[in-house]
Image (tube, rainbow, N blue to C red; front, side, top):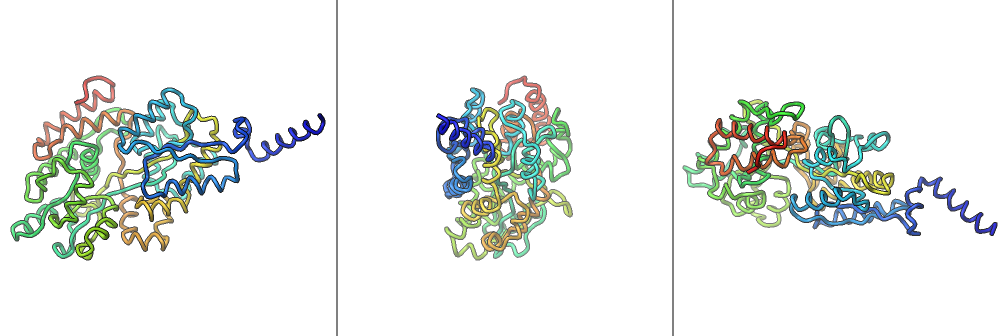
Length: 420
């Protein structure tokens, strides 16, 4: 008996010394399983990160990578259902950058404090951190980010435009010459249309919501933004499929040779290289066009933030694992294999990243001056109000439509009214 008691005392001491109370309390007899819910990654980068971090835990925990549905709406629905039911098997969550405010307000995710917060913010770009912050508290750690650039054909446009007016004018000249001239942009009735509008509003010096996210702001910058969208959509620069186009249709149109310009994310670069090597030789990049000459654009960022579920039984391990999943090596792997821009500033000077990301410095500049989408728990409704009102872009009536959006946002923020 004394031998058994001695063994139990040794095991308890080992648990305490390694900070393994959560794991020892699980009763499974093996490493704790941490469930990581994130977007479905086809590159293998996320699975590699889960495996590597499991090994680095020294047998304390194993990360199980659970793939969410492909659509953002499907991902959100599954997470909301699990967390609303207080599912204690949700340990680490990959959140779209528009969700942290909603999930924090619902108390579905834990705040990052103390040493965890210090580790999460160290070397991390400021704008992605803003997406993970709600009411002054950090609720997630930025896993990756994304931003749009202007992609163009050097054989058609030796010097890229710096403003939307210049780009539309250049497209008009190319059209008269009978050359490829379309400007590829996301004009379908979906989140991409909201992103386009948000970028233009921010680039014009405005914002969709006020500083406290309690009311719409909009105003003249929003009217200016809507006017630019209408001008493009009714000009020779508009692709005939503009009102149905998303990022991938833009990519395919550019690769087919019908366009001169494309506003899109960096995934188009390796795609052009693989699918049209001839045109790839003329494929160049530049900063997102501004609204006014001399004022840099403020492109809206995307990306994923990693949060810890509020009902997890292994919160200490979950915070540690989330930091591992987005550490330097795993972010570099995700960038090289999956094309996902990192959130750690120093990675942008890493030679291995620059070799595959020759546009790394342009991406970094864009991220340093980027904007975020309206930060509110009601974001889904705000986005729907914008994308439905501004669709199709060639039917936009700038002032009346901005007034309509303002009214719908007021209703959304006060949880009343019907969303279209």
